[in-house]
Image (cartoon, rainbow, N blue to C red; front, top):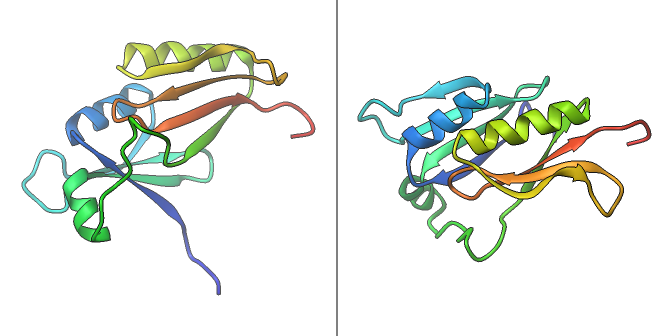
Length: 138
């Protein structure tokens, strides 16, 4: 089977807050109907050079589409995406932008005990991302 594209769908409590958070981080907007009455309520952004798309749906809409509840992120993680950085300075800058934009830092930017330089953060809804310095050999 040959897929044309793959993307991720996340549930969020507040579409407008999500749009502001990712816009403040400097991500490129793919689509938004956050200011209309259209259903489903969603906002989506491009991630990385390959323009990987993450859609952020209003929680109730995603539960309706799945015919099931979404993960409770206060009790665990659904997935963690890794975002590559080119320098330690870039990791540090992202960490500051995440904090300023209302995200939560779970591991501060530093050379961690596993030898890699990274930080782990969550957006306002608890979706986790690992911002990792990509070094040779990875």
